[in-house]
Length: 94
Image (cartoon, rainbow, N blue to C red):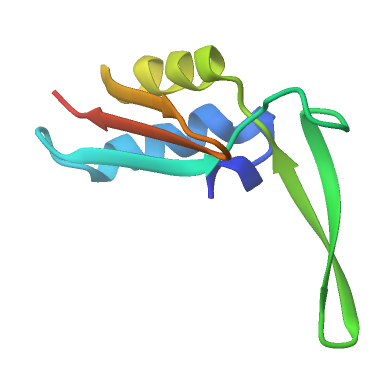
């Protein structure tokens, strides 16, 4: 979900997550990440569902950028693991 929040609101979004997660609780983010693929890191993608087309906002985070955002607003990142296509970020609120 975070990747579909405009960059200008990402800190507010993660702050809200931090507000509702108890101390000792976990944050788990799993999403695609920026690997230098075609296009810009911030995109509007067109998706089709049935006969309709929809615009979908997408922002591809870089590893260091996501870590900084989560640590600033939530707490220490315990795992930040890029896989073939997916980025896994796990943080525990202290």
